[in-house]
Amino acid sequence: MKILAVCGMGLGTSLILRMNAEKALKQLGIEADVEVSDMGSARALAATADLILTSEELAEQLGPVKPKVVTISNFIDLNEMVTKLKAAIG
Amino acid sequence: MSEATAAVDAHPGGPRLTQLLPIDAIRIGETAADWRAAVRLAGDALVASGVTTPAYTDQMVATVEQLGPYIVIAPGIALAHSRPSPAVLRAGISLVTLLEPVAFGHRENDPVRLVIGLAAVDEEGHITALSTLAEFLSDETRREGLIGAGNADEVARMVRSFEESRAADTPPVDPAARSKGETS
Image (cartoon, rainbow over all chains, first blue to last red; front, side, top):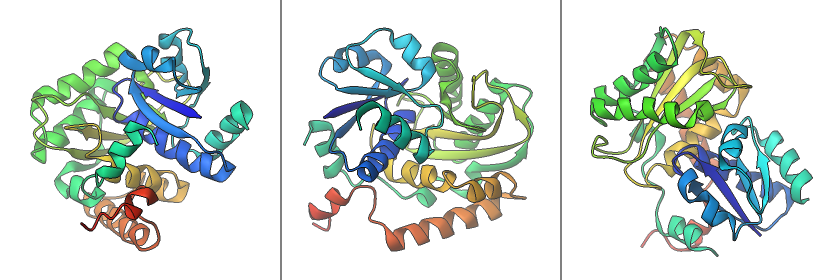
């Protein structure tokens, strides 16, 4: 399974998303690759991703994409990540 | 394993947090009239520590103007940053605590009391430091301790002691990196 963590620049916020997602996936026992992307490349990369992780705001800017989009409001809260990932793929 | 992940494994993840966050990049109890001023404080601290030129501060403000306040990554915490550019001389992090919380216009995570400035030269050279910082801030007691700190020395001490304790019981970022023989 491939997860795409999307933020504006692809190097700050999305890195934090990826770190937290990797911790959550480990806790859930789910095998997945988490990659980061900026908004500019996200739509193209979304074609091969199974799930997108981003903020609510950026999800609106991203518009409709093929994979399921999970929005996170607290990027450093492991509980929120675990709960939302579990609901989406668990 | 994907290309992106493999690239991270091949890269040590860059310097530690204490190396990217020197004491002159820590500002405590600052006052900002609005979010732009708050971002500028984080930018000034990056300039003061020799990491960026003032143009990067403008770029951080422009990022929020273009993409919105998504940089408020958690309640009370903004991660001000922009792209690598000629205005970034090397990777670095700054940290500013605000005496009075400032609204960034984020639906859930406003108001902001802590602004982190991040300057990157590539996509990976700041992973280790950023990961340590995110881990530090994920604990409420540590977070409140940092926001309530009286001076930069106190913050630097907290960060150093956290980094040392973390180094003692966890591998640097990615266990896969260790198994790939980083000692070579």
